[in-house]
Image (cartoon, rainbow, N blue to C red; front, top):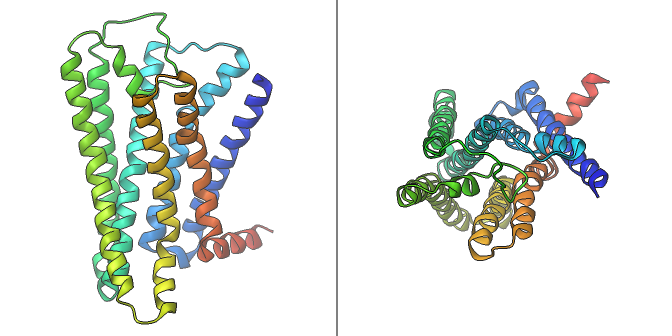
Length: 287
């Protein structure tokens, strides 16, 4: 099965990288897409590319060389980058929800509120928060005594599994893990839910059905990505807490780490006329 798995994951990885690079090129080469929504989308595509690149290339090397070994430094580096890009995805989806809230609930003030300075500041804050999350994970992991020949029941250095290897100060480690989960999970989810709560009530007050559909269609792609991202993420961590089966945990991890980033370019390109038009204009210029 290894040649089949190698071809499958290599194809999925190339689809993710090429799809996200096309979105980034389309957004940055088309003047019609120089808006806050597509600015956040290009940063989300960049984060998705980094997210999948922290795990899949190493997995492909392991399959090709028939070796499942990773160095201690390499494992910590992979965990750190995984935390940064995963949290970056989380925070950018929250910023995009706020952008949709302002666009629908305060359309006349949208250009003033979502100015380029605020958009750049929000992306900068997303990066700083993601870096803080990564360093908190590293702070726990670096307390471990140097270990050899440790097996992790996954295809990458999953932070939740790696931090469970500690035999000392487990209570402190769990407190820090739950604290970071609450800060970097609860608050973004709360922000997204609050934004869509306001959006739904604003859309329901629109008198015409055509206006309601047009307003909600601008949120369709973002809402689909949010459901896919948090749905698979919850399946990974709730599934690992309920079930002790390593195979189920790895399948859920593949869905979260590979399938979700692969679906994002399809969702935004197929459900978005502006992206499709920009890609067509980009293709026409290249031809």
